[in-house]
Image (cartoon, rainbow over the protein chains, first blue to last red):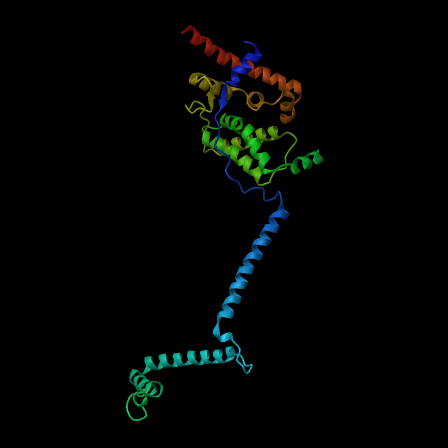
Length: 130
Length: 173
């Protein structure tokens, strides 16, 4: 068998095909500028989305509206929220410390807050007159 | 040289690497397999070399195929050296497939290849299954054309002896 023939014979044997090359952490270093640009664009997009979400949330808040007189309701609302927080805290504390006193206080307050339903000046009386 | 390296590096991209893998991958795995006991280890060795290229960790040398063979050999020898994998050439696993389905010849070829001295095995694999010229092989392996040709001749002679004898035996039967 000549060399050429033997070479041809050897080529009849084919190395087994290997599995495909895994998808690699592809050419990061091939185009660093391009990659950086993409990263910047992605960061800008995220910042834009977050920014617009925050802006929308801020606008939708009714407390942010400005009164006719020019004073911001936000300040008033902030104060009332603060007061509410305080009251809730105080009430919780009172309820935990002295239940009887807390119930008495609640009953007393309810008379002031809830509409009266008995007597000539009651809400029910007013409605009946109408 | 360095300038050549830089020029080569500039044209190095993922598509080229995939092309190299398609062209040389199978032969390189067979080559790695001649050092390692199983196909999976051989594929892992070849993949690790190509992944390093894809990460851009390596500047492309003048002889791409030469570099690939050397790198695969180094990785395979490291794997072998770490002691976790012993060479087991006689395992029944096929790393070559004969077009005519001659399974016995496949095993004979594998055995004959693995018994060749490394430098002869390298030359014959580059020539037959990677399609390189003897001149390219000389450049890739850092030897003269004459040395490459001489190694090739010896390798072919031994393979012919082994495979030819097998063929003759079968004819007699």
